[in-house]
Amino acid sequence: SVRWGLIGASTIARQFMIDAIRAQEGGEIATVMSSSPERATGYARENGIPAAVSSLDALLGSGIDAVYISTTNELHLEQALAAIKAGKHVLCEKPLALTSADARKMVAAASAAGIVLGTNHHLRNAGAHRAMREAIAAGRIGKPIAARVFHSVYLPENLQGWRITKPQAGGGVVLDITVHDADTLRFVLGDDPVEVSAFTQAAGMAGSGLEDGAMCIWRFKSGLIAQSHEGFTTRFAGTGFEVHGSEGSLIAGNVMTQKPDGSVLLRTAKGEEQLSFDREDLYVRSVRRFHAAIRGDGQPSATGEDGIWSLASAEAALQSASSGKAVKIDPKL
Ligand code: NDP
Image (tube, rainbow, N blue to C red; front, side, top):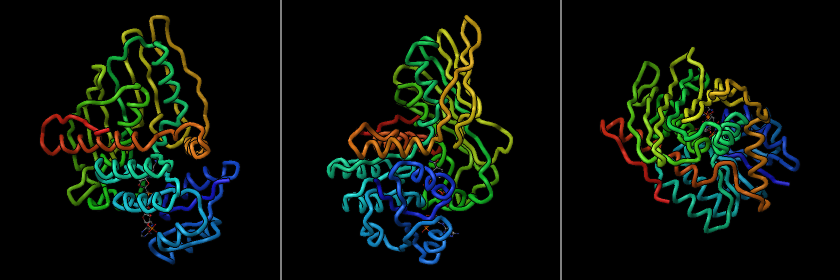
């Protein structure tokens, strides 16, 4: 069995990860930690978690094997380093930290300690994205030439907090959504981005100098170019992911989401085909792979290195937006 401690009384844990952990054979949530004792107790009661604590030491001393970190982004580094030091496996939310340099510290510490560190990039677990990755690897669209990611959504009212008001907590749409798009592009294409040029905007929701919309243009190692659009303020946009190759196009709709939804169309000279794919819950699969990695069977769906890549990519996008120049992406791995 794997006994988990939750670091952070968060929405994402309540909505998805608590159930995903409990869906595993031997997956147990032993303790939740919140910075506020009242919130810890309330959260534990509402979610049937046996123990509630309000310090990291108490959490790490509570007989757990692994931690799931879903606090605000500025806290991930210190919490992950403490958990690694205590010998706990770490599944950390994205972005791993506020800078790729800090994310590298986490990965180095985990690897020195022989600890499993995963980044919770849920979209790698979507059947739609795995089907696209397999179709591309099998040559079904020929040579990939260009990709387009449509991931501009409406930030729900209950989440209109630190993401749009707190730069020091790692707010803004780039650290929130561009990291996912950079990771999903890498995963689906089996390629790495080398350079990005980005424009960001504040379209009415974010304050404090934060951005709530971004458009990025990416160049990949293979020469492929991609565009991605991330936003918090477009209520009616819908999401999608397209990859266009020399022999065909993959056109996916409603796939940049937390649910195993959407469709993937393959269009070639032979006509159109809807790809079928598995509809397993994304977060259940993420935890399943993480549990397997703890047993020494494979790696988490997204590793710590993948988390460095996505953060280095987002960091470069932010630098580009503020400098007005294209910026090279270097994860320093
Ligand atoms: P929340 O805002 O729900 O929670 C973040 C922190 O805010 C909590 O740890 C909690 O601190 C504090 N908090 C929560 N409620 C209150 C309150 N009423 N008053 C004061 N503080 C409160 O964040 P999310 O769940 O949306 O995101 C958490 C992390 O997960 C982020 O890193 C985010 O990027 C990531 N995320 C990832 C997703 C994915 O699909 N991979 C999806 C959504 C988020 P405390 O623990 O101290 O109580």
